[in-house]
Image (cartoon, helix red, strand yellow):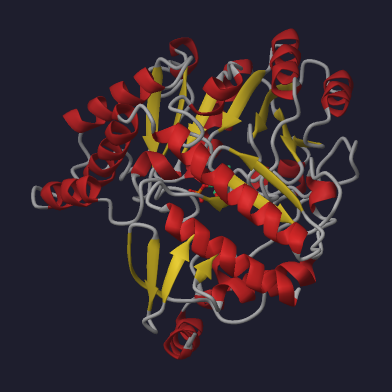
Length: 428
Ligand code: PLP
C-alpha cells in the first residue's frame, strides 16, 4: 500500500499543528511511521488520501457502532443544519434525546449534555465533590477519563496514597486529591478508604477498561466497589464513555447489574459528533446549576446537530432488539479466528474481550490491570500493527487501545481480517 499523500499531508500539518495532529493518539508515536490521513468512510471501511481502502477496527475510537456515514444520522444532520447550527437556547430535541437516554439506561433520572467525554468526566467529578462536600477521588491506574487535570495522574506504586502528576501543567495540589488504585484490586481500594476516612468523594472507573487494552472487571469487583462506596458515603462513577450504548442498551450497569451513582457518556451518544453527557438520579443532578450550587455550562452544549445525530443513533440502537447480541457474536467470531491463527503460528498472546470491545496483548499471562498490560511485547505489536495496515486493516496505533467492532462489518470482512492476521503472524 502507498502512503505518499498521507506523508506529504503530515509534513504540511506539522508546520501548523503541534505534532501534526489534534489528539496525540493519532500520531503513530507508539508504532512508528506516518499517520494515515482519512478522506472518507462508509460502513466498515475507511478510504485514505492515497486511495487505499482500510477495514476499520477503530471506528473513531468507538462511536461508529453502526458504521461510518450511517444514513439516518447523516440525513438528520443535513436537515438540522439547514435550519440553523446553534442557538444558545433550549430546543425540544434536547428533551427528546434526554428522554430516550434516560429510558435506556438504568438508575438515571436526569442527564446533562456536554461536548466531550472529558467534559462529562470532569463535570461528574465536580458534581460528586459538591454533593459529598469532599475533595478526594479514587481513579485506577491505566484508566483514562479524558485530559482534565484531576485525571492525568500516572500509576504510582500500587498502594501509593498520593498521585504524581504525569503531565507538566498539572499542579501537585490537584494531583494530591487523586488517589490511585490498581484495577481489579479491591483490597487496594479498601486501604485507600481506610487511610482517607470521610475524605473520598467518589471512585471513578471504566467498568470495562478500554485504555490499557481491553480489561474486564474480575467477577465481583464492580459489586465490591458499590459496597465500599455505599459504606463510606462516596459516589460510584461509571465512566461509560466507551461502554455506554455499546455493551448493552444500558451499558455496563445493565451488563453487570451494578448500580452507579453517576454515569458518564461520550462517543456513541453523539453519533460521531462532539458530544458527551453525564447522568444520575434526580437528587444528585439537582445539585447542578441553575437548580443547585455546582456550576457547569457550555455555549455549544446540546448543540442541535449533535443532538440530531445522537437521537438517530440512540433510536436505532433502541429499536434493534438484536444489535448487542449481533455485535457480541461478530466479535466472538473474530476472537476465535484470531486465537486459532495465532496458536497455529506459535505466537504468544492473550486476548481480552467483552462484547464488541476486544484487544490482543502479546504476552502469555493474564492481563487484568495496568501493570500486567505493560508486560506486552511492544515490538511484536508494532510489527503486527504495520503488517495489518499494509494489508488494508486499520487497528489502533497503540498496544494500549481496544478495538471497537462495528455492526457494519460482515463475516466476509472478518474472514478477510483473520486470514491477514495469519499472514502477519507468520512474520512475527
Ligand atoms: N473516558 C473514556 C473511558 C475514554 O475512553 C475517553 C476517550 O477516549 C474519555 C473519557 C474522554 O473522551 P473525549 O476524548 O471525548 O474527551
